[in-house]
Image 1 (tube, one colour):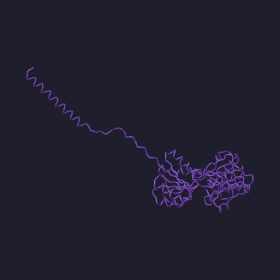
Image 2 (spheres, one colour; image 1 turned 90 degrees about the horizontal axis):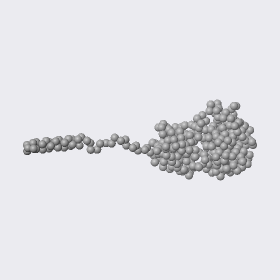
Image 3 (tube, helix red, strand yellow; image 1 turned 90 degrees about the vertical axis):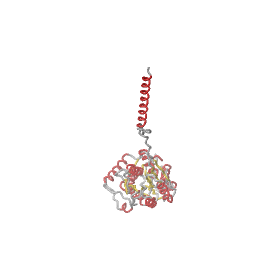
Image 4 (cartoon, helix red, strand yellow; image 1 turned 45 degrees about the horizontal axis):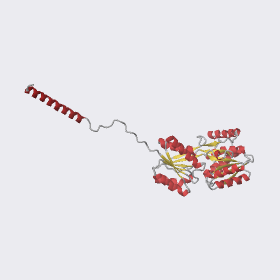
Length: 354
């Protein structure tokens, strides 16, 4: 090969190498150094809403009022995935600091179990206007951030009064109240009206325990009433009622439970139970928080919306007596008559003819 041809070949190869280098540099410049990933990042799971309950002095384990409220939050936990917390009040002095403690945690909603929370909740609602609260058994607080859950206890008590009036063999029936407040008197006079409607000859012996947790006092009162002839005794006294049921089991008379079915405490001694669906009230308000419809104000749970009633899980009430109670239940739902809730209303009450 001549020198001229060799030189030409080398020149062509050099130019080709230069062009290849330029193309490589251009491609490198066009390709982004850190191209964002097209993969969807993993979502961070949302934190569960926290809902808190503050008991009254009866505390958890009362087999009644507080336990029923706690069951409402348990269902909310199961259905909505919320986290539930509880603070138990040893005395009324604990209500306010317990409300403040939960409010400072900024949890989704705080329930106060019982009308004795009235004043403490008013103060807490004013101090924490963005905090959602709910109170059971109280109304008239007129706070936009407080849901008021109330019940027609007189209606449910009327039904177990019918059952008691048709069951007694001595025509003496007992009622044990926790504390003598208008709320508990709704149980008393509704119960008396039910008895009167089916057995006007029966006497209802009434005593108050001045407590919602002293089961020993409940047993003592029940034994005194039984010695006076009472063979069926109804209580509206929270944990005090455990003493009544114990006495009924030992002495062989009938007890009537309250708030939730209490037959599991003594299936052979609990005739039936007046249902006050505190669990339904708590759950309903929890659901309103979840779906964004929470509002202050009063919601009444009565016979018409199944907020109150009676139960007989132990099967101790004869079918013919249940049929009578159910007839009255339907008439209450229909508004045929109004069940008394005070002494004055009871004094003028005339039993409906069904």
